[in-house]
Image 1 (cartoon, one colour):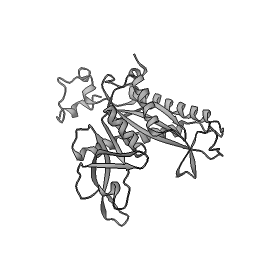
Image 2: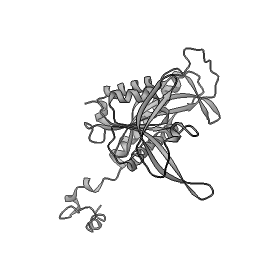
Image 3: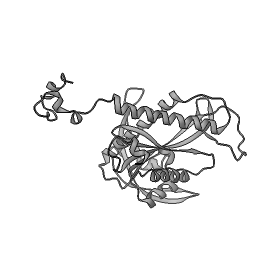
Image 4: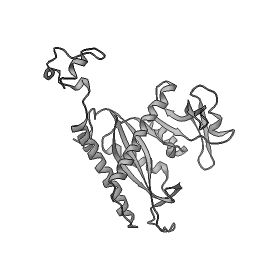
Length: 284
């Protein structure tokens, strides 16, 4: 029995839905970019700094449970496709088959898309909307959702034509009016209506709650040593996994299909939507 089978709530032999994401931990010290042992990455300004310790994580999404399966700590010069290969290698070592792969905009690049196509993985990858008239902004046209193809071009990686899905939605402006916006996704091997792609991808947002839980239990330190910081991040993710597992075993409310109806003094199990459910609730 693999460690994953010990943690999995149920159905561990089935292919799983996996979400990939990057997480940045702010760093406020000094760094030397020429140091070969430098692990501090640069990014957009957040929390008063542009320097971060970065890690890439792979999560399983099953029954609204988010468990961290693999963690890869990223150096400034690491290519994104290399990080993807390491995460997929850890998943294969754990005996996990991928049903569908969900990735955020940070992993949307031509090398990553080529690797997903070569491995024939089912994937939904969010794509940033760039350009004023051309680029991916030119694809987000009209008021309805549709599924065209788009050619991504980069000077260093060439071009690649991929199937995309434009999911139209509306957001409320500060003036009170609602405006139509488009969410762009690269979809490979996903057989679903265009309107359901956005709903399926929104399930990935649950991994953000795992990061918030990790920040609550992560020990703080001022040590500049990268090994200490990564150790504390890994321990925090492990504690979150243990808490989620214990919550699943002892604190969750079982579904109606899992209740022992014989112990409720009810003649037959109530059908979904039946008025007999009201008779079962007081017996709980």
